[in-house]
Length: 305
Image (tube, rainbow, N blue to C red; front, side, top):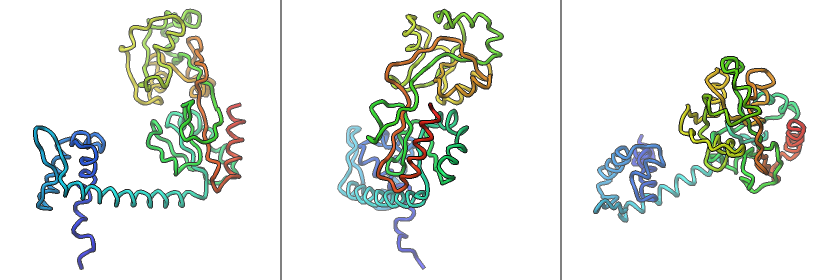
């Protein structure tokens, strides 16, 4: 027996490619949006046109224009997939409704929250806490979370805000690296000597985080070697490299305090605190688990105090 959707089942991979291509007006932009190469996008569209027997785009002088058939099929795809996505999110929210959903960065989760997670769970009466960790929080669906921990003073969700930490930064390295470079000790009093050592760089977002250039500028040093040294796109990887003795990392106090207390890292330069910058917790006030939310807010207040 043939299925109801036999005409479209084998087109499901190509239809989102068509929708993105029509919406963005470019195979190249559609590929970047979907994580596909431009030739792969072109192949999907060609296969779709061959199967349907119609042209979905006209191509003149390097300009891509969707035909009427292309626009109609793209619109139908958008409507269908948007509805599916909405139902999937609603289903996931219902599945997670028995607990609190907290979104934060991978760095915050690994460096600060996870070592305290059992204590947090006990403080909320052993009820479920769903931790949603992502790299930059851009992919967090605010409809599916009760709290979000972030670094933007202007806010992320427009919810009530609880300040967690000031943005306090300073250089750190492993005790083994300091033993091999004893002159590094003088950087606490004279930060201008720090560029003489191997500096590890975190690929921070421009203007959103303190960089080595910002840190040096605060101490009156024009840092002109910022293109040198090893660069990391992951904060935990950079800290691990510092703990392995590969160089000096610029660290955020709340993310390295535990490692300094354990002796894995040592501070080797003065502290720079950027005015008004910090880490913040935003929380939803219209959820169904208000009692647990209040308990978690109280726990965060005590834990960071």
